[in-house]
Image (tube, rainbow, N blue to C red; front, side, top):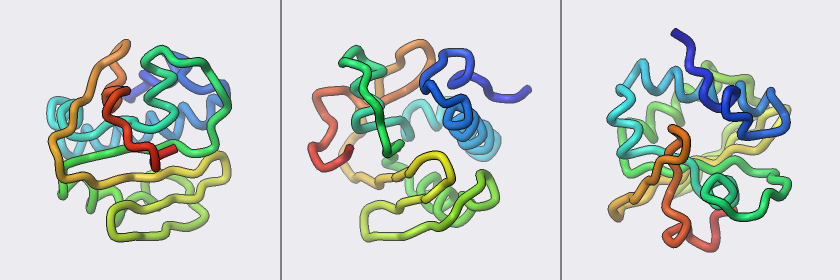
Length: 134
């Protein structure tokens, strides 16, 4: 069954961005299982703050965070086959993905990751989001 949580929850006004998230999560769940992802991979930054109750503002970057090396490197190596991209740029602690709709960042962090569920979407706890992640 296709993953549709971002669409059914209407996380983004642009349904194409919801579809991007659905495609990412469906692929990751098929590779790693939902319990693994729920504990090790989630939304962060401004998107996580909005999901957890802060004011809804336009976002230009869709950031994710993980503590899991296999998830991080799987996405880095396969993102262009999962979603339509215009480019991927790797850095030491994260990579950026340019898509026709939104910029995506995937951050790799070493400390424990505290993810909280809101309507089934897991995001980094609002008090633990680094200031440098949008």
